[in-house]
Image (cartoon, rainbow, N blue to C red):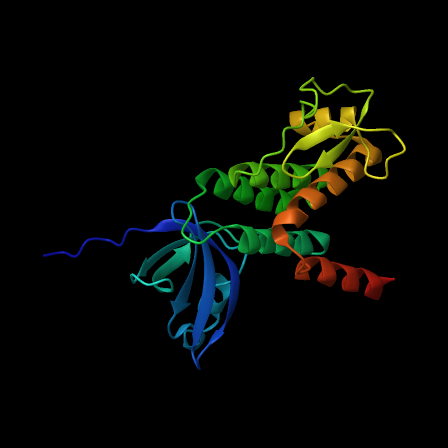
Length: 239
């Protein structure tokens, strides 16, 4: 009887570290099963080919076994070419992976988010960083996790957001109208542009970044993101 081929799932590795003398402990983000940890036994003894595949930003097809929280990776192969990230785009990739590691619950599937993440990696590899697209990913991620921000409706009075007015983001409520001099004030036009995926100009980019950093920060907690610190150190070193 010919054994059946293993059932494989599209995946990326968000993180990896050494485990025992010859194995790796990896954090998988899969299309249909979400995020989970897995051991790759003997990976460090299989040469450069294994090491080259088992790293972040490589599109994989993987198979695994085990009923516990930590699975055993039984099969892995390249699904397509490696997404080559360098410079700022590489730090951005680390940032995306850290967000997924910190905010995704284990074994909680997010198929749409998986494909959004994959498309953003392709864009980072081919075109470098686009600040607007990064904001859209953050917004999509919040929505996929059930933390979506209503950007087009003012919370207090339930009126549509107007482009020429100013608003403040309030956690668990959304946006409320505020004076322009408020230190957290965001132009209505920025909110509408973020919702319609049409951010443009440094002002809108800055306001959108501050808004999403505040929204994400609530769920990330007080522990700082390592990827932001790495980027700051690298930027100082170049200066």
